Length: 216
Image 1 (tube, rainbow, N blue to C red):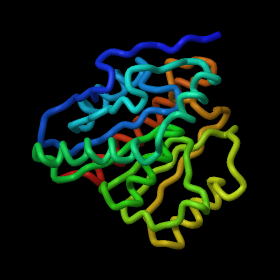
Image 2 (image 1 turned 30 degrees about the horizontal axis):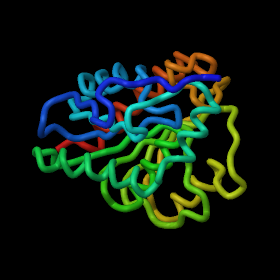
Image 3 (image 1 turned 180 degrees about the horizontal axis):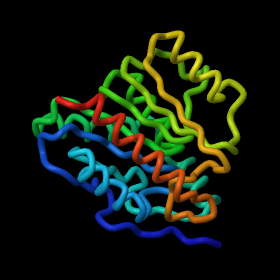
Image 4 (image 1 turned 90 degrees about the vertical axis):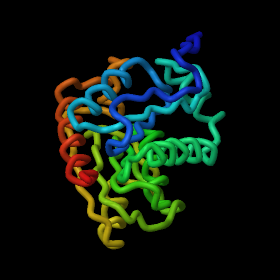
């Protein structure tokens, strides 16, 4: 049976970039804050000039095993996770960040979209994530969506349905699909699904999108 992986600085967010720069909170997927998120966040901070914060929503553990990830997800309170993300946004604003964005992956993408729906950020990026019809509401900021070619979606939460809903509500939305990819293609710590070329392209697009919408 797979074991959980202890992570550095458990429960403490990783932070990169200068205080007062536009803030970006990066929200991990159901595997937890695995090592790949450190270079991702560092690159986001250096390329875009952002203050990047990566919370640990699993309180000190992560995994590269799908079964264990499912267990961790079941134990996570969505409300507590959203509160933790919003808290980091507030802390960055208190340090002088006048604009803030959020980037999330899979589970974290759903949380990112919910935080955006609450009006907490000025831009949101979600990798392989949507909101279902049971999660109604308008997202009042620009949204970028990255989708894998192969993925499973709930009946009322397909990319087509979600993008249509955003457009009907007047949300500026940009979507990108990546041929030959599977759900999780950006997670370098789980190589079974990794597509390095698609991950690099999605990252570059994310940087430009956030630069555009978070510039002071």
